[in-house]
Structures are given as C-alpha cells and as structure tokens.
Length: 262
Image 1 (cartoon, one colour):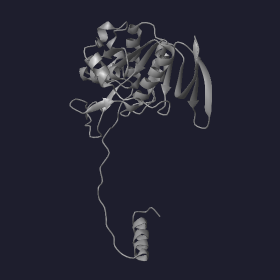
Image 2 (cartoon, helix red, strand yellow):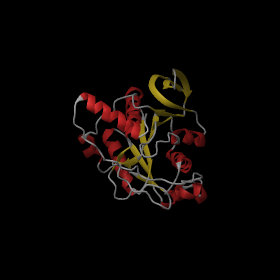
Image 3 (tube, rainbow, N blue to C red):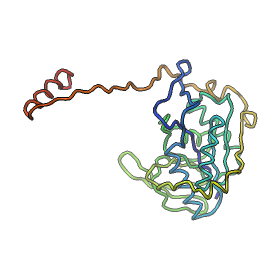
Image 4 (tube, rainbow, N blue to C red):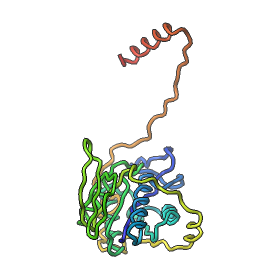
C-alpha cells in the first residue's frame, strides 16, 4: 500500500509576530516543530505499513527550513519526502494551500491512502485535508478515531461525530483526517536518524506542477481576506487579599459586582 502523510512545520512558540499588511504569521527565525496532530497521522501510517506493508511518503509546503519536519518523519519511519517550496506559494489561505498540495500530490505517482492530522495548531481550520480530497476527486472521511479493518480495495473506520460514533467503509484511493486518540505517536529513532541523514528530500516548485497559473497559488489564489489579526493581550494583573473567610467572601462578592459578572 502506498500511503502519503501530509505534515506541516508550525511555530513552536506562541510569541509569533503578524505581518500587518498581509495578515499572515512571520515564520522566519521562529522556533518550529512538526504540527502535533500530524504525528498521529504519521503513526497511523506506520501502523498500517506494519500490518499491510508498502511505502510511506510525506509531503509538506513551506520555506526551505521545512525540510526539518521531513527529516523528523524519516526518523520515525517514513520512506520518502517532498517539500513544496516557492515564493509564489507564500501567504496562502486554506483554499490555496489545499490546491497547492493537491498539485504536489499529483506529481507523486499513485497513492492509495492520504492521511492528515485533524488540524494544525497555527490555523486550526481543519479544512485543508477535505479540500485537498475534493481537488483530487477522491472520497474522504474526517475525525477518524479508529481503523477497524483494511481490505484489498477499501477500509472500515470509526469517526467521532458530535453526538455519535459512526462506522463507515471507504474505497481506495481516499483521504482520512485523524484524531489524536487514534494511536500514541512513537519517538524519533536515533538509529534511523543516522540511517537517513543523507536521504534525499525532493523539492517541487510551481514550475513542476501541471497547473502553473499563478492566480491559483499564494496570496493571489486566496479568496479569504484577513480584516485584522493580532496576538492575544497578556494580562498579568493580580490582587492579593488577606482576611477571614467571611471577609474574603465579601471582598470577592463586591469585586464580581464591580466587574459586572454578577
């Protein structure tokens, strides 16, 4: 089975600046890590490979330093990695990102199963996976919490719906987005780090795609207009009170009334 896992490099800190003009995060020089939800998708791929055999490929979009998350995927057991990197991809919203990755997937040969984390910690939209599947014209299921069975041409999965757990069968090729409860991700292997330190990471840019219309990518291909984005205000103000239980209760009651909470 040929499995593709979509991974992303996200900021490893909450102290990230925002470009006041474009409204996108300034990622240069910021400590980064693999998106935590993608670790569960990668572990799911590894479990399936152990059961059914095959190859695991990973794909990510970002600046050249995003190769670090591919190297981490190699240390966990991935076989091949592709980085989509081009200045024309910068500033993409979920629609342009989905289209860009779908174009990259088309350059990777036949894929039976695409796995994505539920969402990313920097965007939290949970839209890229399903939108990719639509662009690729394949079925998809979101919020997968368990894989019940894998057949020759399909798989049976459980998905976590708002009020129920539903079971569905989906035909290959398909795309799944997985929840964090599906498997416990393994740690990167130092032995695999040594084995894969020189392994190739293929880089693709716009000129490698079938569709090279620049209006479909980056800011040009992003219909979402950010009106305003800003980091949350940090409030460290505090008050220390001393007194008996009755005195403190009275002070707390007056304070809540002052703040119009009651």
